[in-house]
Length: 175
Image (cartoon, rainbow, N blue to C red; front, top):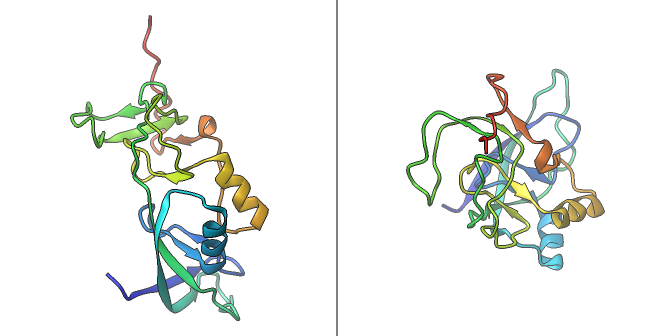
């Protein structure tokens, strides 16, 4: 609930344009928000002002930045896009019981593939089955690179790997 107040940790020299404190409500710089609106991208909503109450440098001996960008908090779309757990080669601890949320205990993912016909075209979104993951389009990637936005790393979906226990990809079904 507003008013939004945050404490930020600085891990480099300057604060970034995109701060993913959570995949549900990232912070974006006002510069990012203005460009987003101007280019009519989709998948973010809200754009509520944030008061930065403190910036804490995390490197020993580092200084606080001279200026702190103005930030807004946004909500990321949780659309209809659904991950295909078989083609993702996901290892799961238990079968999916809810086809809507696709909540499961994912232990490893090797590539991200969406089920055909489930994505409705958002430029940034959280897919069903992997709610903590943000997926973006090439359009979003081009937008970020064109404007020089910072604090974002893009991994092609087919190269995405999350496997903290080193289980390896699930075998593809035979036949």
